[in-house]
Length: 416
Image 1: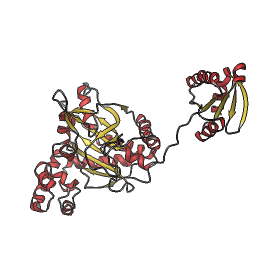
Image 2 (image 1 turned 90 degrees about the vertical axis):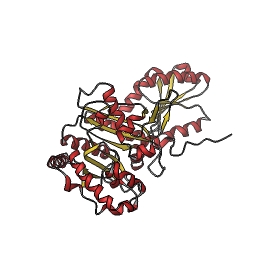
Image 3 (image 1 turned 30 degrees about the vertical axis):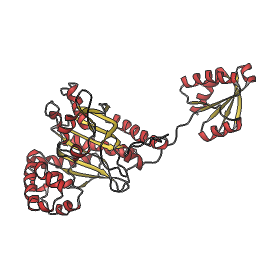
Image 4 (image 1 turned 60 degrees about the vertical axis):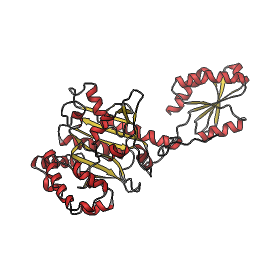
């Protein structure tokens, strides 16, 4: 019989890996609540145009990496490659554009057909946040501060650095775009095939190229700082002042352009040197045309997303959750009584395991190794007198306790 394996680029989340994953997401929920963010969930697949229009036809995600299929009704659907476009679509679909700002976060699986490597999968998980209706550079600074707090709460403060750039407004980008086209046109024969195709559609993407032949040309490429107009320069200075007010340190990196077409002004990445080539663990920026692409009004937004797998690989493994109490029944009658006792204890908020496999020594060995704090022994004599033998595993003291008093005694022990 064939032994099935998970598809290439996917993996099972079990045991310690699952605990790491849950810790990342749980930490995010705690931090986001402090900033007033609430959770949204959008479908795992959407109409293909939700992503093709919003991410840009020239982006690698759209042109090479999307899982797109036609359903039985002839509709073109795509497994979501990222979360922001679906959030913008949900805002418009649910008529929420009149109730701004919206502070939301999301988490869940994303899908991209790309070469699997350390920290990169074809099914991966993201946790992200979006501030829809970000009226100023101050709001950009605040959501970046929230990202910093999230990473600090995971214990990663010493391993990461924030790299920051501006893409300016549309007028600034168009002036820079023209200068880039003129520069790269002079060196077109030295560009990679992908960058030659991007030259007409989106030359800014060439700055994000990983091809060595493209990167060799970047040092002499026109610098964006020379093309920032006064409004964009003011926004950039206000952003940096806001970050300093929030106590967020950063380094300026003029080569950050991000891979999607809807960004403007603020772009940023939190990066590490501990994951090999895939060093970015959280990234995002400001976008101002995405809600319009979904049929809504012009709404300025700022958001970011982080790879859960990458963050999970950087944190210490959380402790395994264990039962508070183990019940060790001796005999069939005691087994059914154990079921009744376990229900009462679980209703009282305790975690309970019922140990039945093997002799008493083997059962006790498993209980001790599990980290449980108490063990309940229940035999025929105990049944007759409606009592249990309660052992405090830390002190190894044992006492006889009426069944009706077990929950109160255990709650008292846990409180102390």
